[in-house]
Structures are given as C-alpha cells and as structure tokens.
Image 1: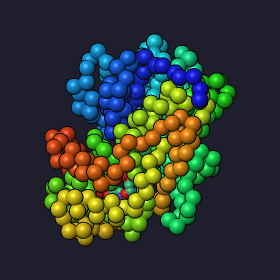
Image 2: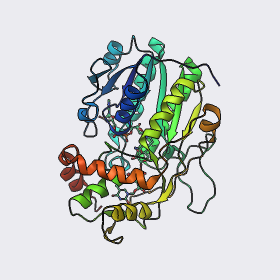
Image 3: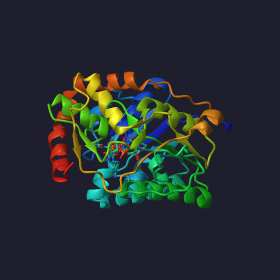
Length: 339
Ligand code: NAD
Ligand code: TDX
C-alpha cells in the first residue's frame, strides 16, 4: 500500500449535487481535521440546501464554474487536493442536449487538470462505470480496471473523454491523480430526474411510476455513503496514477427495483406505466471491485438494499420541501419526451 496522504484543505467540485454533497457530509462527520471548499455552479442539479447547516468553519461554498480558469487561479492555491464531482450527470438530458456535457465534463475537467498542474495539487477524479459500455444480461463477466472503454451515450462518452484527459495529464505532466469509476448510487439528496427518486416522488404525488423499455436493464446499486467512504479511501491511500472500480455487488433489474419501491410504499406491484425506451439504453452494468477491496481494504457497509431503499423513501417523504420545487418541471420535460 502507498504512503497515506493526509489532506487538510480540499476543494470538492459539485459539492451541492447529490453525491458531492453526501461526500461533504461524510468528510465533515468522519474527518474533523479537514476543511472543505465546495466549488459549485448551482445548475438545476445543484442545491445549497444540500450542505446547509454544516459548520461554517469547516465548509465554505464558492459559487462558480469549473470552466472558469481565472476563478481557479484565485481559489486553488493553498488547497492540497481537488476531489472532482461536478458534472452534467443525467443520460436522458445528454440525449436531448449534449452540449453542456461536453463543456462541463470535458472542458471543465481540462481546466481543473491545468490548475492542478500549475499549483501542484493532488487530484481525484470521480467517474462512472458507464465508460465501459454495457454487458449482456446473461454474461457472467463484470467490469474490471482492465475492461476497454466503450461508452454509449453523450453523457458516458463525455465522462470517458474526461478520464482520458486525466490519464494523459498524469503520464505527460506528472499530475498526482487517481480515478474511480462507480456504479449507480442511491440515497438522500438525489435529483428527482433519476430513476429511484422519480418513482418515489411520483407515488407520493399519485402519478404512476414510469418504466423504460422491457424493464430488464440491470444496474449495480450502491448506497452513496459507501461511495463516499470509497472515494476517501482512494484519495488518502490509493496509488498515484491508478484507477479503482467502486461497487457493492448490488445488481438488480429495473422492474425488481420498481416493484420493491411499490411494495414498500403500499402499492400493487403492477401499478406503473411502460414508457418509451431510452435511445441506446445500456443493458447491464456490473462492477468487480476486488482491486479496491484487496489493495486498499475498503468494504461497503450499506449492502442491505431493502433497508437502504426504505430509508431513502422515508427521506423523500420527510423532505418534500427539498424536492417539490424541481418536480413539475422535471415531469414536464419527461412528458415532452414521451417518458
Ligand atoms: P448531480 O447532477 O446531482 O450534481 C452535479 C453537481 O455539479 C451539481 O451540484 C451542479 O450544480 C454541479 N455542476 C454542474 N456543472 C458545473 C460546472 N460547470 N461548474 C461547477 N459545478 C457544476 O450529479 P451526481 O449524480 O451527484 O454525480 C456526481 C459525479 O459522480 C458526476 O461526476 C457523475 O458522473 C459521477 N457518478 C455518478 C453516479 C450516479 O449514480 N449518480 C455514479 C457514478 C459516478
Ligand atoms: O423514469 C425512469 N424509468 C426508467 O426505467 C428513469 C429516469 C430511468 N429508468 C431506467 C433507466 C436506467 O436503466 O432506470 C435505470 C436508471 O436510470 P438513471 O437513474 O437515469 O441512471 P443511469 O442512466 O443508469 O445513470 C446513473 O448511474 C451512472 C447516473 O445518472 C449517472 O450519472 C451515473 O454515471
């Protein structure tokens, strides 16, 4: 195992989004010696409420764009690491309008890498299993760090492009970087455009849940808290220049997840609508996280999907004020797409 890196003053990009804000909560709770500067543009997906109430001496919010090189010149010096979560993150949006995905995910990553090069700052790049494309449902294989890149959507190809930039900047300029590719996250603070929160909030609103295609597409679910502990482990113990896959052996097809939500919310299991499939819809994702577990000793803690789902449903029931402002516009956008 490499020497432990002990960051004291980190920048978390996208720290007002779903996974980034969960990571900020994790760091504040578990690592009292660390100060966090959140850099977030507050797009439709960013909400300062996600980090409201955290101690002001531990967390500072800078509202700005990762593509803004002058802003990075002002804020990056003095920090010892950047943990990069900021992205356009939703596949359906990338199909409707890919341009912001290229801008934020590719150009934004380029700007951060240039800042890390200039100020010699450690960089952790948060990426996705979607860069590997998809697997057939009956294929026994899972993705590993050696799987070739084969992204399918504008979103996943922009994330794959950003991963390639990180690798090139590391090899050519000696950036001190690590990359993680994680599977589908669930938990609190996830935008209502995503599968699980969309269906929970639909049921609360008396709208029938919407299932794409034949419902047999498989996603490998991980609780966002386990993603956070994995990223912290990689940031502090990972070997420079390495990629680590993050997953918690949570493969489930969409219809199974939807039926679990319906059951937990007291609805009949067929109380949903089949809707138009996503163009290019990836069939199955599956992660083999042996490298992370054996090399760095990480283990997921929240592997009981049913209880994680129940806690997530309870969170959305208790936080209607949080999701309500985004709900109508999100459903209007889906309705226009026939979804
Ligand atoms: P999200 O859409 O919930 O949040 C993205 C955040 O980034 C928002 O706060 C937004 O305001 C901010 N942002 C967007 N463009 C920006 C810009 N140009 N400058 C500064 N801030 C900007 O996304 P998420 O689901 O939390 O995903 C976070 C990261 O994790 C992404 O890099 C995503 O690719 C990756 N990831 C997500 C999943 C998942 O299941 N959601 C799985 C694996 C990896
Ligand atoms: O209403 C829906 N009905 C439905 O059947 C929605 C919104 C989705 N789906 C399906 C599509 C997928 O097979 O559910 C599955 C999950 O969909 P999303 O929540 O949109 O996630 P996905 O496309 O798998 O991507 C997610 O995981 C990987 C994140 O959004 C990405 O940021 C991450 O990289």
